[in-house]
Image (cartoon, rainbow, N blue to C red; front, top):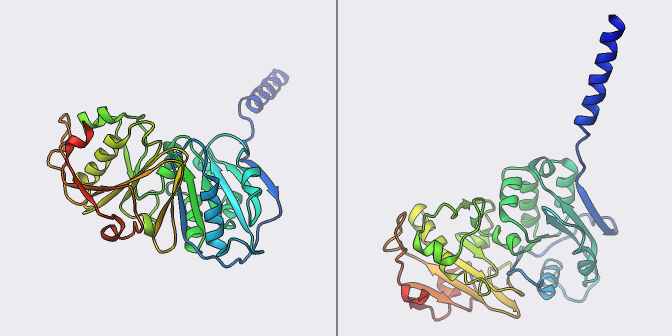
Length: 321
């Protein structure tokens, strides 16, 4: 009988080994040399990409901003952050001027974002770039983690942060997180409190993107209506007195330098929509009414809306007709 019990225990232990494998390691893809240490930086700088084809010129712009030159021997380390995928960004970024190393981190859980080795890799970077995908993954996996703090540290030391599509949408202090799913403009305008309108505030609190909300794939997916709803909701539901919406077309980037000055780079357009008062009607189940907001396709200084919007034009709801 004793031998039978021992055999049963061994069998259970073997089953446990099969059922509970060791935790998977973070996927890393690295190219070239070890990171620099103690490099003096001239940021912060931002690159908000609209999705679709990447704007290499905007990524190069970030690299040049933090090293304060376009042709010099100073080189930076770039870390690409994504929630799924592979190393597709490594070689194109490594081939740019002024790049010492590139490493891609695939982080798909909060456990990944709290790993000391991941935190160290992020902190040692001078430029961070978030790929597209699902912004909800970034919100749920990063908020309140050690990697979240490391990302902020990169900016504090004068580094740059860029992203495309979902990776750009998480950079504003107001984020449409899409954790309940996506929504079209007509649906959002018809009910500003639709279940699919899920917002996260202050995932990051970048000085130059305070009270900003970013939307991407903008003209291609007709997203002006839903951006207006996102702006209206923040004005209605929070203590924000002004909200600046930035809509970025595909193959286009909005880059912002350390003074808060913005430039549009790429094939498409960017739209800067300022809401500086509460909407007339913003209630559950009732179509949005929001007039006298300001809109421009040119912004030279987004940190100061009064200067940033050149010749702002008053708009009314007829804009969406």
